Length: 115
Image (cartoon, rainbow, N blue to C red; front, side, top):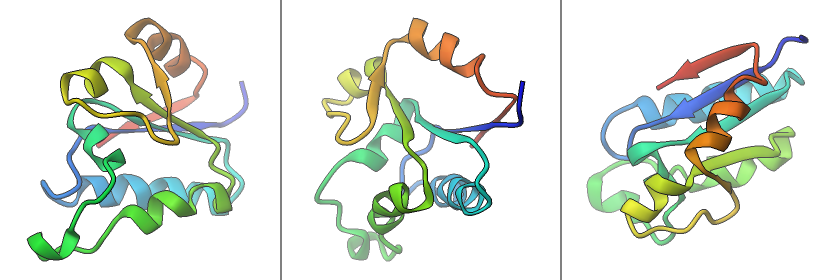
């Protein structure tokens, strides 16, 4: 198996630095042409919600980082269907996956980082 990386983002965008760090890792990996994927799981799916006001919580907006993923060659962006449904969200540009599909997808990557 060639080297590849899956980053699993499980934190809401404003709950601490984990959401930003996950996006930074993915963008850095993409800049080096590493086969990389990003999975939003649990509260991490809140990063996909539109219309967030980062200034209201005195944070930097992460939406620009999400929009830059394709510019860095990151085309494998996934979201847990169950997490989305539990929070009343849609996947947006991410590909929704069932828990079974997530298990199979994780096995395709040689390295997995969870934040």
